[in-house]
Amino acid sequence: MRLPDGTLLKIFRSRRNPLLARLRPDALRFAERASRLQSLSIRTPEVGELLWLDRGKAVSACLYQPLAGQPLDKLFRDTREEFDRHLPQLASYILRLHRLGIYFRSLHLGNILLTPDGNFGLIDFLDIRFKGRPLGRPLVRRNFRHLQRYLERRKVQGFPWDALLQHYERASNSSS
Image (cartoon, rainbow, N blue to C red; front, side, top):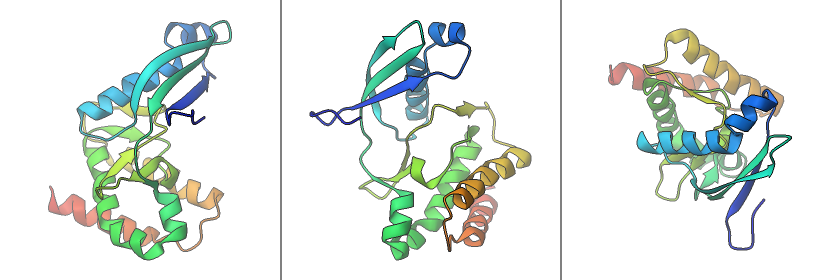
Protein backbone atom coordinates (compact mmCIF):
# COMPACT_ATOMS: atom_id res chain seq x y z
CA MET A 1 0.00 0.00 0.00
CA ARG A 2 1.47 3.37 -1.04
CA LEU A 3 1.19 6.00 1.68
CA PRO A 4 0.73 9.72 0.93
CA ASP A 5 4.46 10.41 1.45
CA GLY A 6 5.41 7.75 -1.15
CA THR A 7 6.51 5.20 1.45
CA LEU A 8 5.17 1.68 0.95
CA LEU A 9 3.51 -0.37 3.67
CA LYS A 10 4.01 -4.09 3.08
CA ILE A 11 1.84 -6.40 5.17
CA PHE A 12 2.91 -9.98 5.86
CA ARG A 13 0.37 -12.62 6.83
CA SER A 14 2.64 -15.50 7.63
CA ARG A 15 1.85 -19.01 6.44
CA ARG A 16 4.54 -20.43 8.70
CA ASN A 17 4.00 -21.95 12.12
CA PRO A 18 2.51 -19.09 14.24
CA LEU A 19 5.05 -19.57 17.02
CA LEU A 20 7.99 -19.33 14.61
CA ALA A 21 6.37 -16.40 12.84
CA ARG A 22 6.05 -14.54 16.14
CA LEU A 23 9.69 -15.23 17.03
CA ARG A 24 11.00 -14.13 13.61
CA PRO A 25 8.22 -12.19 11.88
CA ASP A 26 8.17 -12.03 8.10
CA ALA A 27 8.73 -8.27 8.17
CA LEU A 28 12.00 -8.84 10.03
CA ARG A 29 13.01 -11.62 7.61
CA PHE A 30 12.24 -9.28 4.67
CA ALA A 31 14.38 -6.51 6.20
CA GLU A 32 17.24 -8.93 6.89
CA ARG A 33 17.16 -10.21 3.31
CA ALA A 34 17.11 -6.67 1.94
CA SER A 35 20.16 -5.83 4.04
CA ARG A 36 22.01 -8.98 2.98
CA LEU A 37 21.24 -8.38 -0.71
CA GLN A 38 22.42 -4.78 -0.41
CA SER A 39 25.66 -6.00 1.19
CA LEU A 40 26.16 -8.05 -2.01
CA SER A 41 25.52 -4.91 -4.13
CA ILE A 42 22.06 -6.11 -5.18
CA ARG A 43 19.64 -3.22 -5.25
CA THR A 44 16.51 -3.52 -3.12
CA PRO A 45 14.04 -1.18 -1.47
CA GLU A 46 15.31 0.63 1.64
CA VAL A 47 13.46 -0.86 4.62
CA GLY A 48 12.66 1.52 7.46
CA GLU A 49 10.32 0.69 10.30
CA LEU A 50 9.08 -2.80 11.27
CA LEU A 51 5.64 -3.16 12.83
CA TRP A 52 3.35 -5.70 14.44
CA LEU A 53 -0.23 -5.40 13.19
CA ASP A 54 -1.51 -8.49 15.03
CA ARG A 55 1.09 -10.35 17.08
CA GLY A 56 -1.35 -13.16 17.96
CA LYS A 57 -1.94 -13.98 14.29
CA ALA A 58 1.66 -13.17 13.34
CA VAL A 59 0.72 -10.32 11.00
CA SER A 60 3.73 -8.04 10.66
CA ALA A 61 4.52 -5.14 8.36
CA CYS A 62 7.31 -2.87 7.29
CA LEU A 63 7.58 0.59 5.87
CA TYR A 64 10.04 1.03 3.05
CA GLN A 65 11.12 3.37 0.31
CA PRO A 66 10.31 1.79 -3.04
CA LEU A 67 13.12 0.96 -5.41
CA ALA A 68 12.91 3.26 -8.41
CA GLY A 69 12.47 1.42 -11.67
CA GLN A 70 10.16 -0.37 -14.03
CA PRO A 71 9.19 -4.03 -13.58
CA LEU A 72 10.44 -6.14 -16.47
CA ASP A 73 6.98 -7.59 -17.12
CA LYS A 74 5.72 -4.07 -17.87
CA LEU A 75 8.74 -3.33 -20.04
CA PHE A 76 8.16 -6.60 -21.93
CA ARG A 77 4.49 -5.71 -22.57
CA ASP A 78 4.97 -2.01 -23.35
CA THR A 79 8.37 -1.67 -25.01
CA ARG A 80 9.40 -5.02 -26.39
CA GLU A 81 12.38 -3.63 -28.36
CA GLU A 82 13.87 -2.09 -25.22
CA PHE A 83 13.26 -5.33 -23.29
CA ASP A 84 15.10 -7.29 -25.99
CA ARG A 85 18.04 -4.86 -25.82
CA HIS A 86 18.35 -5.59 -22.09
CA LEU A 87 18.11 -9.39 -22.47
CA PRO A 88 21.91 -10.04 -22.44
CA GLN A 89 22.24 -7.83 -19.37
CA LEU A 90 19.32 -9.64 -17.69
CA ALA A 91 20.95 -13.03 -18.35
CA SER A 92 24.21 -11.73 -16.83
CA TYR A 93 22.29 -10.40 -13.82
CA ILE A 94 20.62 -13.76 -13.20
CA LEU A 95 24.01 -15.45 -13.58
CA ARG A 96 25.44 -13.03 -11.02
CA LEU A 97 22.68 -13.95 -8.56
CA HIS A 98 23.38 -17.63 -9.13
CA ARG A 99 27.14 -17.15 -8.73
CA LEU A 100 26.52 -15.33 -5.45
CA GLY A 101 24.59 -18.40 -4.25
CA ILE A 102 21.23 -16.65 -4.39
CA TYR A 103 18.28 -18.93 -5.07
CA PHE A 104 15.27 -16.72 -5.75
CA ARG A 105 12.24 -18.97 -6.06
CA SER A 106 10.12 -15.97 -7.06
CA LEU A 107 12.49 -15.03 -9.87
CA HIS A 108 10.13 -13.57 -12.43
CA LEU A 109 9.70 -10.47 -14.54
CA GLY A 110 7.48 -8.73 -11.99
CA ASN A 111 10.13 -9.00 -9.27
CA ILE A 112 13.04 -7.60 -11.26
CA LEU A 113 13.13 -3.86 -11.89
CA LEU A 114 15.09 -1.99 -14.52
CA THR A 115 16.38 0.99 -12.56
CA PRO A 116 16.66 4.49 -14.06
CA ASP A 117 20.43 4.10 -14.45
CA GLY A 118 19.98 0.94 -16.58
CA ASN A 119 20.80 -1.61 -13.87
CA PHE A 120 18.53 -4.13 -12.18
CA GLY A 121 17.11 -4.53 -8.70
CA LEU A 122 14.91 -6.99 -6.83
CA ILE A 123 11.61 -6.62 -5.02
CA ASP A 124 9.35 -9.11 -3.19
CA PHE A 125 12.25 -11.33 -2.13
CA LEU A 126 11.00 -12.86 1.12
CA ASP A 127 11.46 -16.40 -0.21
CA ILE A 128 15.07 -15.84 -1.33
CA ARG A 129 17.67 -18.27 -0.01
CA PHE A 130 21.39 -17.70 0.34
CA LYS A 131 23.33 -20.89 -0.33
CA GLY A 132 26.81 -19.68 0.59
CA ARG A 133 28.31 -20.92 -2.68
CA PRO A 134 27.39 -20.67 -6.36
CA LEU A 135 24.27 -22.59 -7.32
CA GLY A 136 24.84 -25.97 -8.91
CA ARG A 137 23.28 -26.92 -12.24
CA PRO A 138 20.20 -28.60 -10.69
CA LEU A 139 19.25 -25.45 -8.74
CA VAL A 140 19.95 -23.22 -11.75
CA ARG A 141 17.61 -25.37 -13.88
CA ARG A 142 15.02 -25.37 -11.12
CA ASN A 143 15.23 -21.57 -10.84
CA PHE A 144 14.71 -21.19 -14.58
CA ARG A 145 11.76 -23.63 -14.42
CA HIS A 146 10.11 -21.33 -11.87
CA LEU A 147 10.52 -18.46 -14.31
CA GLN A 148 9.18 -20.56 -17.18
CA ARG A 149 6.10 -21.63 -15.17
CA TYR A 150 5.49 -17.99 -14.23
CA LEU A 151 5.48 -17.08 -17.93
CA GLU A 152 3.11 -19.96 -18.70
CA ARG A 153 0.72 -19.08 -15.85
CA ARG A 154 0.66 -15.46 -16.99
CA LYS A 155 0.14 -16.64 -20.59
CA VAL A 156 3.07 -14.52 -21.75
CA GLN A 157 3.31 -14.93 -25.51
CA GLY A 158 6.52 -14.54 -27.48
CA PHE A 159 8.96 -14.46 -24.58
CA PRO A 160 12.50 -14.92 -25.98
CA TRP A 161 13.17 -17.94 -23.78
CA ASP A 162 15.83 -19.54 -25.98
CA ALA A 163 17.65 -16.23 -26.36
CA LEU A 164 17.67 -15.69 -22.59
CA LEU A 165 19.17 -19.15 -22.02
CA GLN A 166 21.74 -18.61 -24.78
CA HIS A 167 22.79 -15.26 -23.27
CA TYR A 168 23.02 -16.90 -19.84
CA GLU A 169 25.21 -19.69 -21.24
CA ARG A 170 27.43 -17.18 -23.10
CA ALA A 171 27.82 -15.06 -19.97
CA SER A 172 28.60 -18.18 -17.95
CA ASN A 173 31.24 -19.34 -20.41
CA SER A 174 32.87 -15.93 -20.77
CA SER A 175 33.18 -15.37 -17.03
CA SER A 176 34.39 -18.86 -16.11
